[in-house]
Length: 452
Image (cartoon, rainbow, N blue to C red; front, side):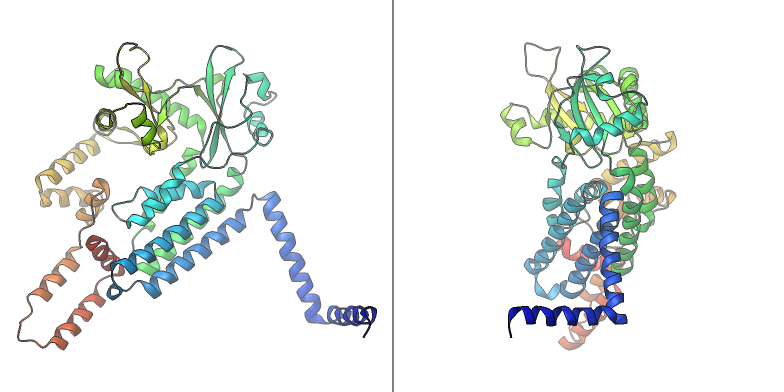
């Protein structure tokens, strides 16, 4: 059959399909899908697509654990399951960007509760996230300062971002009102406000699915996470937090702490809900330990200053920086010491702060004292006063130590060890299986992590 006849036959068949009801429905569905995708991409910053990607990733990870996480397969095999899950989660966070970068960072610091592959894989999220061009962030600055453009506020505004994080990026500039003052201009990424509702919906839904599938109680924390993330998107709040931390340091800190830690000044004339302007400070981030070593900084001196700083906030002022990951701390040579090497920490990103009451600070100090003395009764009493039934798990979380078996799992293991030697091997194995089935999936995971 000639080509023209074949083409005509195919065209006729296609017209007959379209005239049918099923054909019309298929075409309408495909058209709606394409239109929905384009609307989501151009008008909603791909919020729906990012949510569906998150659901798919969690479903695949959950299925992998349910099907393949079996203790009899050995530690190496179980670690391969963890590695697959961590890589899939990393890919999802990278592809989605925005708040998902922050979600991944939060998971990466839970090294006490999660297997090592999660920390290894997700720690790369502390590096710079993709930035957007200046023309895309210009409207954000203009709506923060009505009637003003970038050039009305700044001179020498850098055409490229010098740093980019999950929800914002930083440019260098000089103030129009004071051209000698170099500043860091933190601008919220334009898509964040469009995505936050969907992202928090995805967080709630995924947390609920994980809790139901694996018996891991995490929904209690979701409400707090949501409220804190919304606070972080208010840069005026961040500016107030930064100034409060500066005042605390000046008024309550000892001379060593005031000399060892610095918090950049805020310039309010160029600060709004989506734009924060502070003085620019040069330094090396803790994300780059090799560079710190090449510069000759002592890890011991750096850690001494870090411990002093956060102990000061936790136990003295009660105004605690809630996001002290390595990317938010710089190390620089003390500007007032031109004769000897003297490190000074620069604390950045004050968007998330926790306010502690005086009563809580005292209880928290008592909790740590009890933990050091192994006073379990006091630890349990204090943890229960905070609404936490499992003091051991709480201690594990805050101290970043390897997990301990729950008391139920511990009693079950001791009961197995005390079984009479006269029992048959098959009876012992059967009892062990029954005992394992009574333990939660979470307890079994914690036992396997402790062995690893």
